Amino acid sequence: MQKRLALLAVATAFAALPAAAPARTPARFERIAGVRSAGTPARYDRVGILEVGRRSAPNILVLNPGTSAGAAYFYPLAKTIVARAPRWQVWSVERRENLLEDQSMIDRGKAGTATSQQVFDYYLGFLTDPSVSDHFRLIPDAEVAYAKRWGMAVEVGDLRRVVRRAMHRGRRVVVGGHSLGGTITTAYATWDFHGRTGADGLAGLVFIDGASGATPATPAAARQSLASLAAGSPWLAFGGIAAPFAGLFNATGALGVMTDPNAPSLGQRFAGLPAPLKPPVPVTNAGQYGYALDTATSPPSLAAAQAHLGRLAATGSPRGWVGDELTPLRRFARMFSGWGLRGLDGTAWYHPLRLTIDARAVADGNANPAQRVLGVRATRGHRLPRSLRMYAFAAALGGPGVLDATRALARQSQIPRSRLTLVDRHTTYAHNDPNSAAPRNAFVARLLPFLARIARG
Image (cartoon, rainbow, N blue to C red; front, side, top):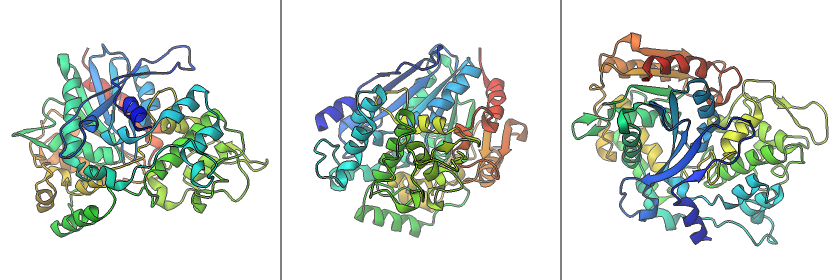
């Protein structure tokens, strides 16, 4: 299995599966060499790029996923953007940790060569059913201890390779991100690359309900975080759910919506699914997935995974899902299942805890003692180009603080207020709605004119 996984993960390109719509949006995935991280096997020192749109487009928007998210998360949004702004291509970053995933059975589910039950059993069912002999391999923490070094320096180094490739042939480039991806965007823009900032040569920055706050962690807190990391798992427990299970619940649940939405829920019957995620009545696969991640029924610990998806049907056995809010459930499921793509989903089963620790020291690109403890070099927050444009969108999780951080970042470098686009929807948009709401989407409505002001060609 390891050999099969390595071959799958290190492949240099994946073609998009046939799209349902008559007009296919060009999509291409490849992995390129990333930075060297001490102790990491060379096959994992790589970063992926999901390119959506025409390769000849003169402008590129590079998007960084947030905590526990993968490149396919942005795929539906990217298709929307390039359809309405054809002079742009969207690149979604696939971080190195996703190379550890075994996407083989999810790919079979997408292709229709494995049933929903087979997919579920392969990733989760075997945990409670000893008769399931064909299943993926859980990776012991001790086997991947090198991932404890996958912090902001590694992430920014990998992103540097992506941005430089995007700038090739003089293309105009904007870098952005959602949630933690917004903090990564700030870190990259303010990073000290031998006296130059990461923002040098960029045309803009985009912050989607995520940015770097001004107050860093204390040195003592940074040291304590490193000590806890050294003694524990390399991975973040998303919403209190240990890796890789939050990602597996999301990926298999999303795939069930796409392949078998009206069948009785497999997840609801699974003893390993946390009780707060289970509806009190029998539901379909669609009903289970919507209930677990809708703002009205999902537990507060999963606020980072939520959207306004709708509600359970009032009748039926099992009950289905009524999509009458901002985000259509199937679009949401497309994001997280990676529907239409091979080898990718929109989740990260393994999210490096070190990256989250380091993010707390970015502090809008201002040098601070915690950065010295953690080896973070986001110190040039006062040196950004004055020509830089910034777009920040505040939703429920980041809130108005995202806008405050963007104003402060601009003010430090004397970037005129006229170059900022600030949108506050924190009372109406959940954390994931900006990337998934359709057909009306306030984030996209303001992004398109922002990009138009920057575009070349």
